[in-house]
Image (cartoon, rainbow, N blue to C red; front, top):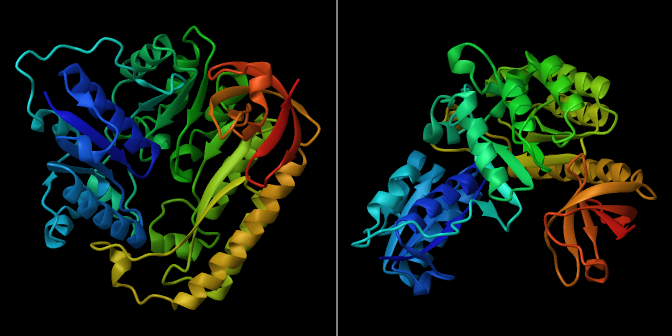
Length: 416
């Protein structure tokens, strides 16, 4: 029987895979501990999306190696750049996440641990619906780790969702490297079919759909928006990373979609939903991005006005085609990132200004600092109720609140 400590970095898909590792370890009789210094083995589920992240992963791996008896490294960096750990002098097993449980010594009589919880904090269940993607972006290292899309059948994912609901999940987070191409390898995109089936499961819960590239959802945008409009269980929230407002740059990125297709997705959801949240990503400072290309990105930003935006400076990743391109100067990337981030601040603040004075039903997702609780409204906006102890709010409850203010990226509310 081993004592284990697990740390997870990166996206919700990684967190879902870590939960699957943990369930298998607990079912085999192994025990979680709070810190690596107490563990027989530390497991590090890595990310490698940008160069800074890679450096942080190597630094943390060296720390864990010094703090625990054995170290296992898994996740995207392990699969795409496993040799980096050896070159950095890190003594660790580098494994695919599915191989981690079998690499840890089993007890003589492993038995399932009763009460093993697939639901985070008793509220959130993570459902990875597929692995991999259909893209071949010139700058992306993650695809080297995840490979092509591999979609389990709809019924299999529905049963997993049903199990999460039966385990007490009030929020199911649908994840994948690109949820929009679910089923594409079989010639049919089926995300809308899967979501409709999950919403048919009995119970009072909400579903959040994870990242979907514009090209994947463009061909099913009408069907998908209709499913959202007809199902209250779905958070009215879409994360569709456009990355650039220039078709020339998108072509150099090999992003598959064009700006017009992204805009058509946004317009379709605008037609079907009164209130919804658009989340997107922009990369600034791609090697071929001219001043005109950058201004096109800013113009697109102002046009679609997303409420949630990830602004990332281009970072060369080893083994990618974009890493061979002559890059822009660091100051240029810094200036563009700063200007776009300021625009983001203004647009997001304006969106939250419009919420002040409204009454909304929210799901209490987790405890915050002090007496506060973190909640989500129907469009997956974060709402903080600061004096929740006075009204005995509990995680997993649906409650009514009045929005009284905001702190740009989240709303502040009082109980009704």
